[in-house]
Length: 52
Image (tube, rainbow, N blue to C red; front, side, top):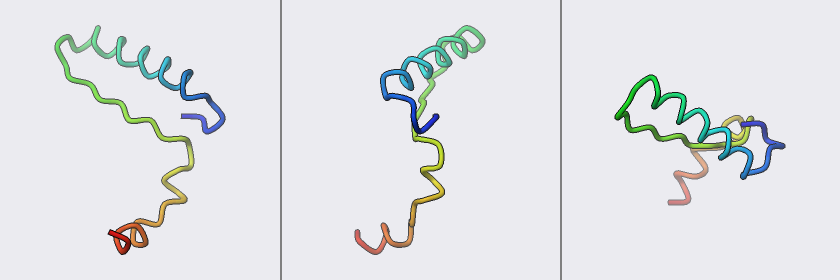
């Protein structure tokens, strides 16, 4: 999602997407995980793993 979008608006849009998908695929289990745009570019997974 747009990093400047509020969490409320992000969830609103993801709910709209989920509803549209359920119309096309009734009975589907849909999970939408929201991250701000660019988040994955800044993650240092190696550093996170070493802390565990």
